[in-house]
Structure formats: C-alpha cells, structure tokens
Image (cartoon, rainbow, N blue to C red; front, side, top):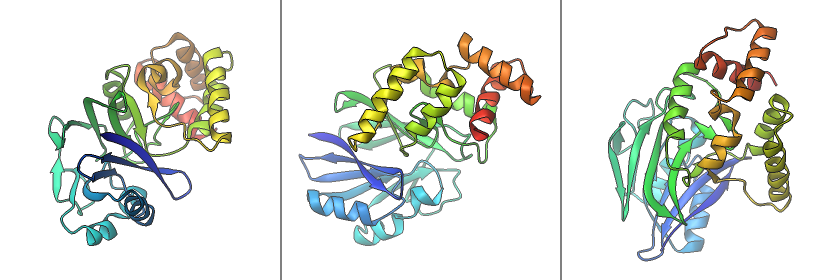
Length: 264
C-alpha cells in the first residue's frame, strides 16, 4: 500500500513522494517546486497531507507556499533551528514524526547547513527501511559545506552510516555520475567503484534514477563514508600534503576529501 517515487524538479532535484494507496494520502519531501508536485498528485489522484523539510535552501522549500494554498490543511514539518519559517511543526533530534504506519526518527545532521535534519523509518517501504537525508549524503558523495565544518559533517555522516545496511537512501539530487568521477579520480584502482560507475552510466542512459542508494553498498563505495578506510586515508593524506592541508585525525582525512571534491 505504501510506495515512494521521485518527482523530478529543476535540473537535478528529486522531490520524494510517499503515497498510501489505501487512503489516497501523500507525503512529499523537500518540494522546491510546486508545479511538478501538483501535476503528479493530480495524475495519481492523491491528496497531499504532509510535507517534510530537511533544510532551508530554496530548492527544498520554494514550492511549499503554493502547495499550502492548494491544500490549506497540509502539515509542514521541519527543523526547529531553521531560518525557514513556513513550517506548522518544528522538530529536533530524538523526536518522532508519525505518518500512518510509519514513525520517522528525526536526526540532526549539520554540515551542509546548520539546520539540516534527516528522517529515518525502520519500518520498510518498498522492501527497505527509509532515510530521507536531503543534501547530507548523496550516492558516492556528500553535500557541500555551506555553513558547517568538516568535523560536523563527518559526525553527521557517522550517524547515518550506523543505520541498517538495507536502508534505502533517498537523497535530493541526481549527482551520482559527477560524484563517481571524483571518487574514481581519488581511488583509481577501486574495482568496485569502477563497476558501480558502469552500472550507473547504464541507468542514466536508460533515463533511470540512480537514487535511492542502499546504505550497505554506500559504506563500501562512497569515499565520504570511508574516512577510516586504508585506501582513502592514503589518498587523502597524499592530497593533503600536496595542498598543505592539516593531516592526522579522521576529521582531517574527511576535510581533505571534501576539499578535493570542491576543487576537482
């Protein structure tokens, strides 16, 4: 009865729609644009009753006002510390957001922005536990640090990588091929990364999304989740020395990887 599908927006955003065919209700995550959401819900005959917000950036909240006009009773849930003021309900780490049979645990994951949160449900949808993580974790990448520090982002990703291996990671952008180009540059001898890149290229050539990712696979592939992996440590340390960046602890390793992606 429950299903999650992407609603493409802008050039590379995904607005995630969680629908319940039993009651015709829908929940959407980070609707930066209203028009594609309105069109999809009308096509599917769904009523929007909940919006989840991960952070305040316009490409994640820009469509909310129009959606609230169309559904005046819609519940809008977002981070308590956010500069975005359009929510009807504000939540923080450790709190729960209930939607039908699902209970989403709220996780505070600063780094990309200081207000960023993620929503995790251990109850399976489409065969997997569910993580809506906005711009914190991408397929083979992570969000750029607009407001937080490398240490904050690494700690946030450390929270996420402790979730169950089978968790489906619903991030907000189709950045996978660009992320893989950097990951392959950083780790050119990683055969598993090479194989995954070929798989993702095939999916994109078929006009299929590469998202969601499965967390267990991300842990073995994504360099931004591998700050304690020997190959990543070696590559990051070499880069840090060439760039005269700090070396040493896990935060320094992560910072070097992020710096490398920012200047790739």
